[in-house]
Image (tube, rainbow, N blue to C red; front, side, top):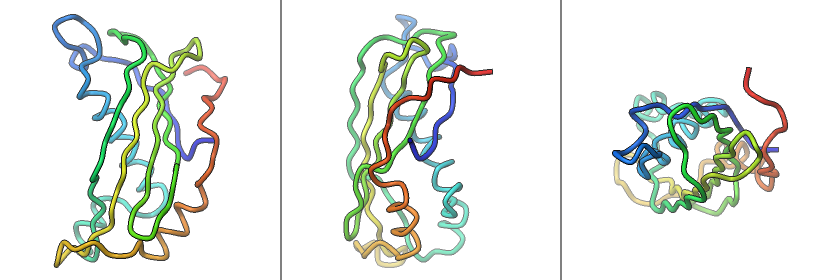
Length: 147
């Protein structure tokens, strides 16, 4: 099961002049879920910025767009932990339409850095433990429909 999933309705401001999801907005949609995931496991951004101990920048991002999404389309957006390394972790995201087809896929790699030196550092044990608790979860979309 995915670490976190939710439904999202494509809005007019998500689309381009052709009326389909603008490619950069797929990253915005998954980043919103990433922020909620971190908050859910106890690492909300406001804490990261106020504590000033470590940051978690994205150092790699990639995406696939399998079929167009238009205004009003509803997708299930899911995030799962694909890998946990010494200083980094990888997340995978799926945007799945209500017919069960994968409309989009993204993968992000995050590195922990010391907030003062901006140098790479080992994952803090508390973060590592939370992430490892989700590592290897299935990304299969849920059969439920939005309410």
